[in-house]
Amino acid sequence: MSGHPATPGRPAFSAPGHSASSTPARPAFSTLGCPGAPVEQVIGLARAYGCEGVELRCADGEILPPTATDAEAGMVGARFAEAGVEVVCLASYVRVGAPGQETALARHLELARLAGASFVRVFGGDPDDPGVAARAVTTLRAGAETAARSGVRILLETHDAFLTGRAVAAVLRQVASPYAGALWDVVNPWRAGEPLPVTAEALRPWLAHVQVKDVASTTDLAPVLPGTGAVPLGGFAAELTRLGYGGWTCLEWEAAWYPQAAPLAEALSAFRSLTLEQTR
Image (tube, rainbow, N blue to C red; front, side, top):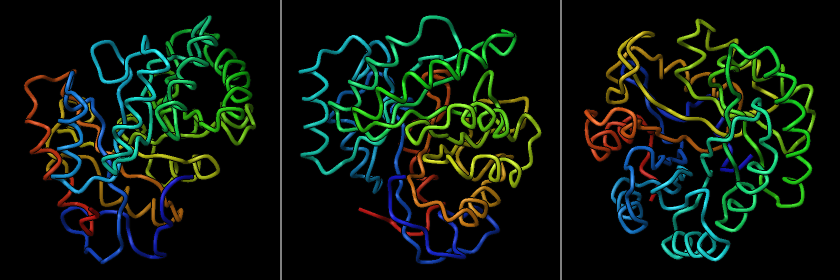
């Protein structure tokens, strides 16, 4: 798990109604919030809002697309490193429960290695596919062998076929590799009705990365500024503290899917107001 260890008894970030303390957070943000932005703009946002790391969306038209060459991936990583901003995670759209994803996963692991990222985010697949869980286990087992050679961990997000912590844990328990971990997107288990302590306990052995966001309700998923919606971010922070989580806290502002959302700068400002200490 990357990052500095949390101070026992103190949350990684606070929400309205929850007291703050001096514990430093490791704030990061996803480039999902600034579609198509060049490296220099992303670095500028990171510096302006005290974010030590970034999660790079791996999609066409982005800084590091799936079609990037080895040299391009290396140059992207080098530029962020020179600026003192860590590439935390390569947010891929690989669905490990879909057929024929082994090659794509291996390539994303190599791109992440070249860019200096610690993690590759993956999704599960179609919730209505009866074979999705078995394929996810098989693909992740094979991918974990590649990951062990590259030093990059694969993180299965609480998303689509594996919306809850319990669903992600059921897959990772079968994979049984230190190179396959979990990414807790706070909204998805919550909207599925899984209580925060249940999600936390389910993911405890594998949790390596978390994504913060806020929405108006379990049925209205358009992004709202962190701390102004219905997502229990204070409870989320408390669970991370209870687990002793010491990784990154990453804002995922879904501007690519909701172009009417407020600018990323506003979301980052609200996000940083939830953290306990500016970390520059």
